[in-house]
Image (cartoon, rainbow, N blue to C red; front, side):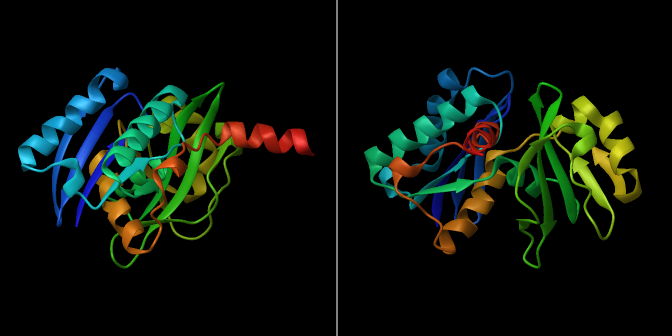
Length: 223
């Protein structure tokens, strides 16, 4: 299977090509996703000697994360998928982060600003893929749900920003936390291939970012 993967939920801009199990990848820190993403895609396709239309699908990090980054990633994904008539596989950016951590159980967190974190709880399954154990959400660091069972490992920019509070709150179940971890397109690709094979591909016009915070705000208005 040949799949393009994009990940723009954090300050790192990432693109990768999955080529029947091997991966080509480009990653640049420091934002500027709008200027960097398409040149990365062009460079990867040129390196592989492929046209976009020769791919089977496009996977993208659908969030949560930076509002601007997610809009750019989803917009580029839509444009490329429309132009090449390709299906799209949305992948949680928190799950992609967890997929890249060398641990069996991961508490993934992004800094959501306003003293909050985007939060996801993941366990690696028998074939090495991270599976969500609960619905992703946005919480203050001292109010994240405490997981049950064995020891867990933290990772992500949310841990870098709020590790003292998170460690205090999660101490009984925490084995440690990994510094300076960001989601990468190669892990979006890995999860995207599995999603495609499981029938989770969607049409290009349905490739929308998931912000979580906006969703919660809408639900509160309806109550």
